[in-house]
Length: 422
Image (cartoon, rainbow, N blue to C red):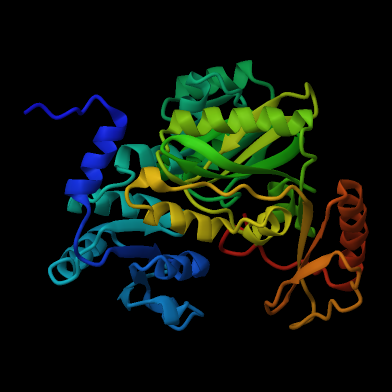
């Protein structure tokens, strides 16, 4: 008897009939930093067992312990794990604990999760694809191949190539680490001598960097859910100031959803779709950033990731759309078979997020009492809130007003945090 494998519906039925596991399904979550609580809660609500691998240094963090079947700790130095230790530890765990999925909850865990999947032959993103979501050089080259504009850039392996780039592309330039997150480690330079000084100081670490033209402009982010290679949900937002300026110059951080149906939104939704297709994301969550150049009005791709955005962007998107990206990602990962996942519709309101380092340990934001305030940050030495409204103009006016007030009421300049905010 020949099986009708060319019939998609038949093939799906066969997978359901013969491949559905009979044991309780298990999700192994990797989190070298504290995040993803709602992902773990939703996975438990979906009936899965949930195991967490995290760092010994944050063992007492506010993990959703009521949703965890067990927590396993990795020795760490500044929350960095040795890959071989993780592979050996999880392989030992797998002797007595069946593992069906592995998910990286933080950007720095993406490559570790991919290596574990390859080693244990567990479905999901492998090491080659993970490279496109962690290596800024790889993702730029890949996006350019798929027709997405990128700022002029070059690898820095060869002296002659670097000098030719500096002669051809006018400054200023950015020296960027290839595998850090957000704006960590980025250095802005204005002369070839400065570039060479930085590259020489990097020594053997030079090849782990790239050189890129600095483009003044407005930075946008698109936060997505991808199912079977299709973007099934996406929210487009715009930072009040580029994150690199906020991190390095010091300022209040703010972002807001863009107008639905606007030209900016439509262009970014299309570029985002092309970027995620180029990088090969089959299913999962993504936070992708673009810059709209002040010089020519063109959108250029900056970076993407295979994870949910930080800096409370999850709460921003949820306020505007009703969709919690952590929970939605969990529903997607838990769908068995994957084709049974149904994306959310989401409502179409507007929201704005504002966060600031604060002089006060527990700043009082009660004076910000407009009815549009729907969320307040509860974090020592930070002030933050979210406003939402069906009126885009109302959100914009409130956010602009609140940013000015935050600078007076709370803002303080402190050393740049060790971790990114977005």
